[in-house]
Length: 235
Image (cartoon, rainbow, N blue to C red; front, side, top):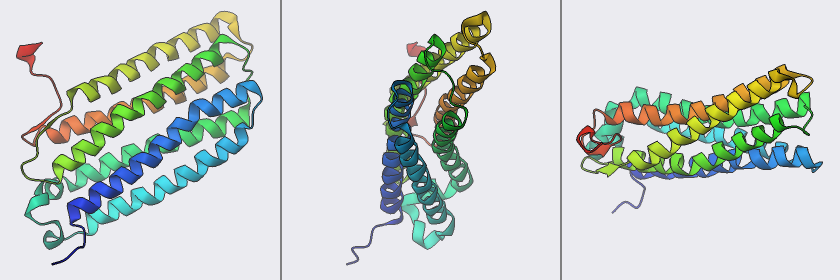
């Protein structure tokens, strides 16, 4: 009897490893900003973010290859949900990888631009980073359980609470983005365009995380048993 992992087991394992590293990457973003603000060794943290982002790129390519190179015999009937959603899943994992890319870009921009940090705008930038990092936990939960459900023919799950948590995070980041831009152009800082740029980048990070859950909703809409939206009759 073969002890090799099935296609579904391999996809789940790769996804879990990828999500762990993605969580590590975005989890370092608040630390990076705080270290920059307090005169710490933020450059070492940036190096670590860049290393993890590269690792995430490699893992993402491996996942894509696992999906696209698998034939019908490899996938098998138990993973027909994956087979039917191949194109959508490639786009889905691509959106996840943008989360790592944006995290790295924010750190690189911070290092290159070095904005003043003794103001309310920067404080809110830290809050946005903290909110996005906290949102990674429910996002990872959604993705891991979603892929597990897709890897079987009869698995059912309800992801509404976790998806709603990611949406609340994105809404919170919208409010913080608006506050940063308003304060910046009300004369709170000398170079308002710098803070506007960072607010937009951080907001794009939060938006991308929500976009991932939106893609889950779309794919799951054709997969009975995977519930992503509350039943309107109970609202």
